[in-house]
Structures are given as C-alpha cells and as structure tokens.
Amino acid sequence: MRKVAGLKVFGALTGLALLTAACTTTDPNTGEVVRDNTKTNALIGAAVGAGLGYATNTNKGEQGRKNAVIGAGIGALAGAAVGNYMDKQQAELRKELAGTGIGVTRNGDNIILNMPSDVTFATGSATIDSGFYPTLNDVATVLNKYPSTYVDIVGHADSTGSDAINEPLSENRANSTAAYLTGRGVANQRLFVAGMGSRQPIASNATPEGRAKNRRVEITLRPVTE
Image 1 (tube, helix red, strand yellow):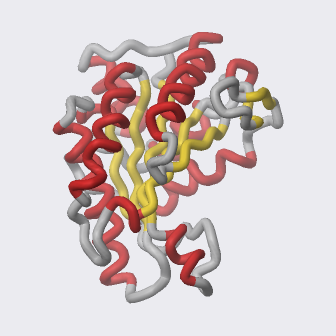
Image 2 (cartoon, rainbow, N blue to C red):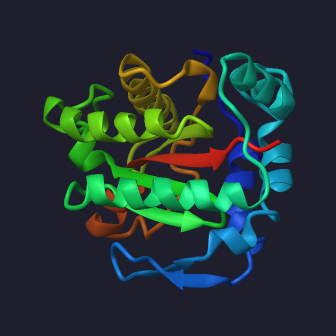
C-alpha cells in the first residue's frame, strides 16, 4: 500500500460539512438526530472525488481508484440505494462499536469513525494495542459486509512535539490501521492512507483534553457510486 499525504486531499474531506444540506432524521438505534442520507445522496460525490483525485493509492485520480475497486469485483451504487446502503452500514457500526470509544458520525453519505489514539496506540507508538484488536475485528466485519465503500484512513496528532515527529507518527498509525484491516479481509483497493500530523485539530491544543481528542485516526467510509 502506497503512503500518501496532501493537505489539498484531506481538505476535500473536511470541507464536506459546508456542502451538505440540513436534512435530518432520528437514528432508530440511538435516538440521535442525524442526516437523512437518502435525501442528500447526490451532493457529495463530485466534490470528494475531485479532492481525492490529487492523491490516491492508485495514483491515477479518483477514477483510477474506482476502476481498481470495480476490477476487484466490488459493485457500485446508484440513486436511492446509496443512502439506504450507508444507513444500514451506519446502524451496524453503531451497534458493534457502542461503548468501545470509537465515535460514529455522519456527513451526508459519508460515515466517519473517530478512533482516539489513546485507546488504540501506546504513547508515541504506531503499534496497535492488542486490547483493541476485537474492536477492529468488528470494524472489519462490517466493512466486509458492505464492500461498496471506499475506506479513507487518516492519522492525526496534537501540536505537542515537532512536525518531524508528528507527521510520520500520524501516517504510521494510519498505515498500521490499514494493514490490520487488510489482514482481516478488507480489500486493499478500497483504501486511501494519509498522515496529517497536527494540521487538522478538532479541539483546542491548549488543554490535555483537547490534545487527547486531536490524537486520533479517522476512517471515512464513502460509497462507491456509478
């Protein structure tokens, strides 16, 4: 698997919130108000595809990555099937990951798994804590059940330490996560891997609590569409 990095690429993922409409519904499994993705499935694909076209594992743009996925025998989704497919996948992930420390959120037709590094890796290490294997096994099981999704794995760090440390650590953690998932049967053609260092914080780095949130691996699941 090729290691990749690029701020332009990940900017396309994080900027999706600006593109999605406020169509919401209540998740029947959790009672949480979430986006009704059956209604919003048309908006995101072009923007994300264009962003990831700057750097993918195939180095041929988003179309090249799609070709690799289709070539691996993975079917593409179309129309209302997209939102329904992602709704079911989200419900199963929420069920399997309840109480594990992994956050499951939704952005349009994208599902985002937020894995805090504090529960996944030892401090300063890119080796997955063996106690986290069962949880990643559950993630892999659901990913294999719903193969018509791209799996974008991006590592992040807090602002403690230098970029020379944070950049490779965040990327190595993403690669470790990807390697584990492929070892559990997730097709390599679905994967995109990057390390962002401390450039994409989701909380303040001024507090220990904020830094803990920023140390994470995010897995974004995007539908493979026609």
